[in-house]
Image 1 (cartoon, rainbow, N blue to C red):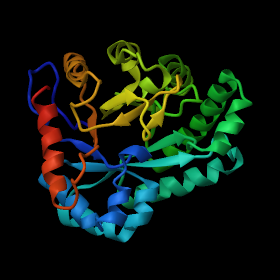
Image 2: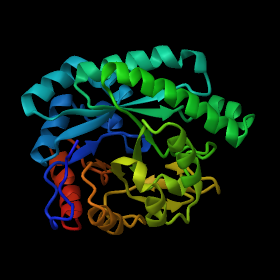
Image 3: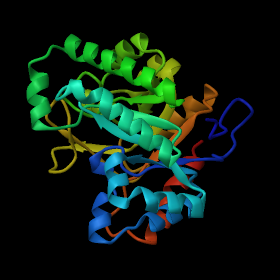
Image 4: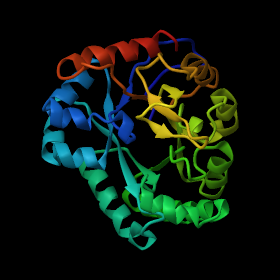
Length: 301
């Protein structure tokens, strides 16, 4: 999917932009569904008004909004689900992965998604306990086996399978070595480069160096900004600190530098804005908040 134009022909503004509503729980707009009655119509209208061409949505969100409401909003605003994000029980129930993949692929097709992003498990105490008994190599090999299954099933549906560097501190998927290990063994996978999740593995990560190593595999980019500290919320890092998503351009991630590298390398894939709002932003205010984040990226690409 050629969704942006930042190649060697010159610095042109982003023509198409995707928006991730909740790649992981800390970025979720799910609380707004309950606290402010956020509807699929309002969400998709805000995305359309902001010039965003699609949304990356978790299956939980699809369940909360309802497929019918999402499809209705898709038709109304011509802004649909571009990527469905599904957590798979790679470690807690590997025997159920095949049936779960088939169900998620079917849902992705119904929604008109162009990719199914498969998350290698879900952050839970049960999973953490199971993974604590596995070696790094065993976890990586499990992922390879499961992603081979996923890509094989994806081919039958004409659906690419995405794999993102994952913000689970007890798994080897938040460092470049782990990502390279999987990608080298499952080349059909589409690697989704999350600009902040490598900080879970190492809070001092240099994302630009990681990008240079992994760029041959990158097919999609999640633009995420975070701060690092010892606060209550957020995602735990390997060293015990946490990362917490913040509005685009206000955290520690060098997004301008990464966008410059993407432009220099002629990247023509999809950029996905991982949204994190300031307090008090909900309802119709979302469109202005989305637009502000898009402007930040456009002005630096």
